Length: 172
Ligand code: IMP
Ligand code: MG
Image (cartoon, rainbow, N blue to C red; front, side, top):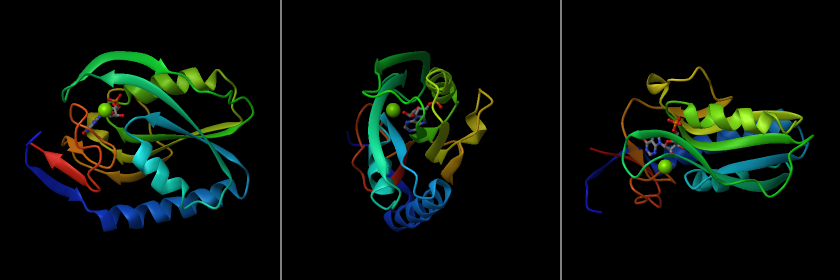
């Protein structure tokens, strides 16, 4: 892919904010184990950077649900591609998302996960585009609130490309 990428959030700014978030999480969980759930594939970079800075004991699990096609627009179709490996009943759960956009993905997921009776269920997202929200839902913690631009990098893709950019960029 050869499209110009403009930096929106640079590496240093990302790292600083993620350190702050990890410290806040440590305060919240206060030494109690937390099950961190990454939503594949977009959240993996954020999940790694976040959890390795936490002192809270964590266990990791992943799930995959698709809500986007290979373009920039939501397909409106949500599909469960991979479920969790472990039950979450009685666990303090932290659901890690790369970006919250319309909120459709998360509202669906939260409903499904809540039915499994976790002790608590919180959503942390690296990025939030609140201006695009179609479902009334807010993350528990947000890294950066961004304008309505299509972003890539740090896990986020455009047609599966650009995920490994070490910063958040905008493509036009
Ligand atoms: P929602 O269901 O509309 O909130 O969509 C959330 C999902 O859409 C995210 O997990 C991303 O995979 C994808 N997404 C939304 N906005 C962007 C973007 O600007 N860049 C890349 N992926 C995005
Ligand atoms: Mg995606």
